[in-house]
Image (cartoon, rainbow, N blue to C red):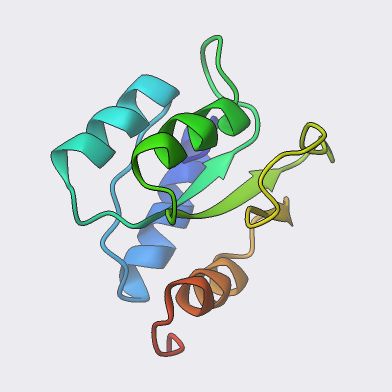
Length: 116
């Protein structure tokens, strides 16, 4: 999930072509609704800066309350570092977004075979 629609759509398309089941959202509310509606979702790619009052870090905290092992890759174009004590299992990926690198990283985090 990225706050910029074009980046989000391109990343979703690329990850879908690499075999991932992708659900897009433009804000925290949409992401939480998608995760709730699709209980098989076990990982996500979130932007640090999101539309609305909450950040990607807030989203991770909310999701991890229900799914402690939810795999997360955070993307950021600003170099915004996580708050002190934030979950060390969350990986930061800089922009510009490299869909293949994100797919390989997520596959590894989830214990899936490498993507083609």
